[in-house]
Each structure stands twice: as C-alpha cells, then as structure tokens.
Image 1 (cartoon, rainbow, N blue to C red):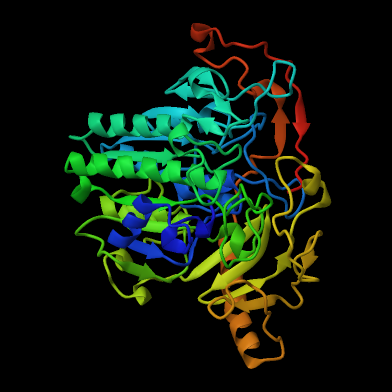
Image 2: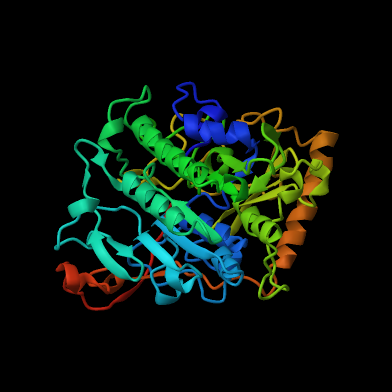
Length: 490
C-alpha cells in the first residue's frame, strides 16, 4: 500500500472512512517507514524488531539486489530469531496470524513455530493461477498446520477477469471469530490482509464503486474489513483495552500506476530506497490512552513495533543482549515530547547494501538505483520510477555516490528533487552527522549479520503436497529436489 492511498494521508477520493477514523481518534505518523522496500524482509523485521541484515531475510548473491520469499525458497525466518508472538506467548497471550505470512518455507519458519497458536492464510504471495505443468502449483492455504485449499480454487478463487474475490472478506470473518473466541483472554492478532498486492481483487460489493478504479475498489474492501474489526472491538467493549496499529510492509507498485497505489509526493515506489519505496502509513490507536488527533513527524519504522509492544505489555526479550534496531514509541504515543526518544534515524537497505541513511530531516544516498533492465521485462515487476528523469541519480544501474553522497532535506524537499550543494556548510555539517550514525550502525553489525536466507531455491518445496492435502484431494506430484542458486535482479 502506498503512502497516499488513504484519505488521512491526502488521497483526494477520501474512500477510507474507517482507517481515517483510526487516525482521527489516534496518532498519525507522517514520517513512518517500512523496514525494507519489499515485503518479506520488511515483515520479518517487524516481527523481530531487527533489520533484515540481522535476521537473515535477504540475499547476498549480488550486491544491492532485493529478494523476497518465493514458494521455492530454501530458507526463512530462523528459529533463533525471537518474534513478537513468542514474547507475548510467555505472557499468556493467544496469538493468531491471518492472511499473508511470507517469511519462509521451512518448518522452523512456519507461524506455529514462531509463537503463533493459530494460522489462517498462506505462506506465499497470491501468485498464479497455475496448472500442474507449471513451475509452481497454486499456493496452498492453511488452517493452522493443515492445508485447506489453494488460491484460485474453490472458496479461495480469484477471478482475474472481473477482479472479484472473497479473500479479504474471508480474512475479516476469521478475525471477527478469533476476537469473539478470545474476548475474555489477552490476544495478539496479526491481520495481514493482502488485497492491495498483485493480483488485486475485491469483494463483489465493492467492484466498480471507487473513483480510483479497480485498485480503489480493493482499498475500499480493505477499509471495510478494518471497520468490521474495529466494530467488533466496540461491540465486545474491548476497545479501551486494545492497542491497534495499521501500516504497510512497503510502498506501492509504481509500475502499475492505475493498479498499484500512490506514493503521493514521494519519489518512485516499492523495491527502491527512494522515499516512495519505504514511506508508508503508520497509525496507532488506543482510546483514552493514546490522545486523539496526534500528528507525529519523528522518523519511525516498523522495527519500532517490537520494542513498543514490549513496553506496553511488560514483555522481555529472551536474550536481552540481542540488538534491536527499533525503539519504543510509547513515550510519544502517550504525548511526551519527541526528544524523549533516543533515535531519529532510518536505514535504507537493498540486500547487503546500505544505500541511504536518514537522520532527522536529512537523508544521504550513498548508492542509488531504479531497477535492472531485466526487471522491466518481468511481468511481476516493471519500472518503479515511471516518467522520472534525474540523471546520475535515478538510474538503471547501481550508482555509487560514496565519494560525494547525494543529500536532501526531506522537510523542504520530500520528493527528493533538489540535491543539496556539497559546497555548503549545511551539507558538510549534516553529512558528518549522518556518517557518524551510519558508522555506528555498521559497527553494531559485527558478529550479528544473519545468514542470508533467500539465496537458494528448490522447486520441490513449492507446496505440492503439504500436510492435509490428502484430506481434501489436493495433493500434487512432488518433483525431484534440485538446489539452485537464485538469480535476483530487482
């Protein structure tokens, strides 16, 4: 989802009343970021409070390339990485994830082995539809530890001709049931609805209802789901005991301008380390605890959720010496001054490459890259910077700026259009500050770089015959195992 897909973030269609209501009644962060510019690394970072370079959800096959968890990936979130759910489980919480998991195919990465008690969703993207002769099968959908169907088949059907599907409605109904069942218990619900990800589909009630076209229909469907969940909390009088966060795992798919969301004033879109790739909505809500109508401008990140939830619940890391990249936002959520936080920085990675660093209002690009020519030919990807012409900066090859980083003041220039003059005192002063933060961060990685989990693939892992498939007659022949070095180019 893009930064400007919501009314409360400036979308002129104003078609997200339920999410906008969350922002009005809670805290809206103007400078909130995903932890990475693609989904799997960002989700893993949110769950662990640790950047992908630490938790292992990245590739080092080629410098500066992105990677995501695909159905054939040999890897995933390692067992030694502690998740929010594992911390909350020790406090007696009932934990459930609904929708898109997408942080690994191995047993140790499965939700029920990462602190969650229940799972309804898929380990994968909604890629497809496929036939039995294709490289992939249609992705399995799980109910806890058993497969209960496949995307594009039966109740999980998605009609790509009409754009109709019940998927978001299914995720919503399951969330309502979970809340009902746990109204007398502490619970953690990770509702990972993924309607705004390709292929975009919406419930029939929302088809052809948006001023924004089909993508707008999908956003309206998602907003309706949020409204249903919030109404359930109110109905059961749980709202004053419930902390709610709404965000996104990366920016919009800018190569699909009519079907991929809006980054608003920001440069480019997902897969890039420009602002449009990682600046996303960030809304926090808790009636009578978080003051209504807050607007927070401090740079914040998905990795901040883990320490924030620890502070709220009193939870503790199993290993207190394990570095967290985030910080608790609780002090400013309860209306303390912004200087009560220790950090105001954002790290923008592509694979192992630290491409950019933001400190306060200033952002330094040490590397820049649009995407590769090969990605332009891939039907899943495309040009994340369509129509942008900034020679030497928005480029089709990785461009090294380390000798003279490209510096922007994001308050004056949120679209990253006007680089600061390196000859000015302001440039030199601010670059020195950013370089110091960068060097301290890189030093903290010593002995704490995770093994890259997204380097290899094996087609036999692709969900051909998961547990439970025999009960619903959906098992498929498993091909022979063959380990292949993954070639990433996005």
